[in-house]
Amino acid sequence: MRYTSIIAAMLLLCSVTASSQTQKFKETLAQAYNTGDPATQYKVGEMYREGKEVNEDILEAMKWYKRAARQGNTQAAKEAAYLYFCGVGNQHGKMLDRDYKEALRLYHFALKDYPKDAYYNMAYIYADGGNGVAMDKEKGFSYMKQAVESGSGYAANIVGRAYLYGPADEWSYKTFRQQKNVTEAEKWLKKGAELNDQSCMMLLGSLYYEGTVLPRNYNNSFMYFSTLARKASGLNLANALNMLSYHYAQGCGVQKNMRLAHESIDKAIEMFPHEPTYYDSKGEFYLMQGDKVNARRMYDKCVQLKSDWGSYRTPLYIGLFGN
Image 1: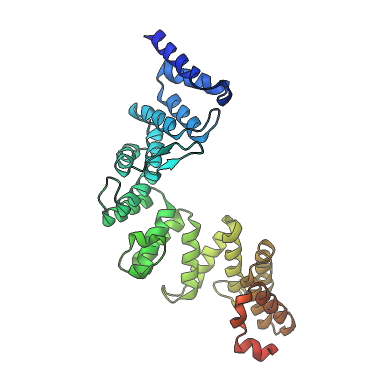
Image 2: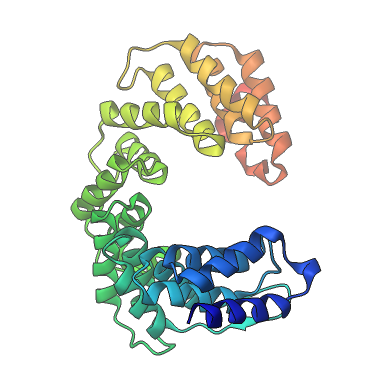
């Protein structure tokens, strides 16, 4: 029996041109055939999927993932499910058709070890429907909540926004459109913030600062933006610094400190020097200090960076500086 396996492995190796595979791939493939080890079978699938050590081949990747999954490898089941969920192709033109029914079957198998990913994508499968699965938006929304309970902060952002904006929502989370419920929105966004989802923190901080949807709470808004300033990067960090600068300038949730207000907004400007809203903020702070010269310099920069902001020259601006 062992010799039969070895011969089969050698025949398969010969079917792939030497230039398209490395010695590492040959050894891994032979091991997968000779031992039947599901972890090694999964590794072969990864190599085919990523085009590492061998030419990319989605169909071969799926074959090896499913072999490993049949032997209990839940990671392989998760990856195979995702490929069926998306429907994919590669640079060589080999296509794998989307198959929601098969994706669900594999995700259910992967649930015990990968509940966060499985529930999240199953939620979209039911919300979307088709491809072998009947549409069931409520079931999909229920699965999205289970993704949150399994540790997905991104899922919490989707659930929270679905409740926050209600049926009028026009963004991606409209897939899970719910009746507007601000209390539920706050609850789920807080869950996301606890899971370190930066979108949830940013939204909660803004809602508490504005006080139009949720009761105004400057202590909470300052807390969320301060957390983002420590943990975020890129645009999320810059926007958090922008909001923190207003808290310092206005003494909201923290002692008023114009020096820290300017330092915060200067960091945001340094990160994204072509973002007009940051110059707008700094201009406001100069006005608060009675410095019209520097305020005008900031507002002019703001308008210069965004030509369609001609309407920004509000009566206040014109009254202070002229046309």
